[in-house]
View 1: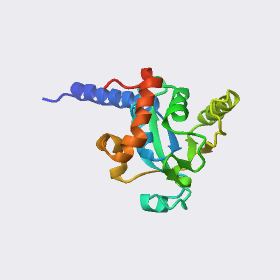
View 2 (view 1 turned 120 degrees about the vertical axis):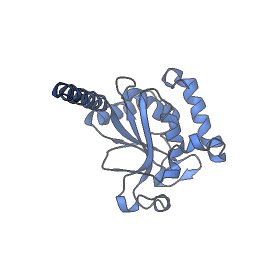
View 3 (view 1 turned 45 degrees about the horizontal axis):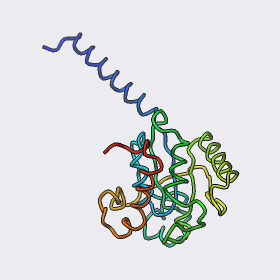
View 4 (view 1 turned 135 degrees about the vertical axis):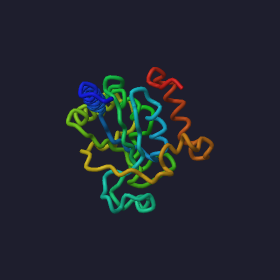
Length: 205
């Protein structure tokens, strides 16, 4: 027989579970990063400790044009991007920037990345908070001051207006298509560089 005491205990348990879930979610932050084809970017960032989710998509344009065939024209304002969900208690924003600038793409290439050309492949950080903006600009300043790259860094730093997930077949593309020629020649070397340069940041398989 269900008693009032049992119902009260059950209600308390539900409330506690909800509170813990809310607290866990509150610890999560997002940043949207663009740096060439989203397949490789996604593959690199979803390999990091403290990153709970990565979604490939489009940012910089409007909802009506957030479709692969249209974005590929380079006329929409969109950049192929990834929405990274991370726990700052497990991986810092600075560490994400380390991977973004030093492994995931070449921030000196203007409106292109490797074999891909067009503004949809530009280097851009779409920040979600003022703190992300300040840290991104400071990081770029430090890279420039220490002449880490021979050429000028062209990465844009702009506020996130909206992010639109890409079509389902683009999600986790590297994971599902490891033998795809594009992945083998353009993206697997990035994962190898990640393991070599930042081994402590990589999830244990």
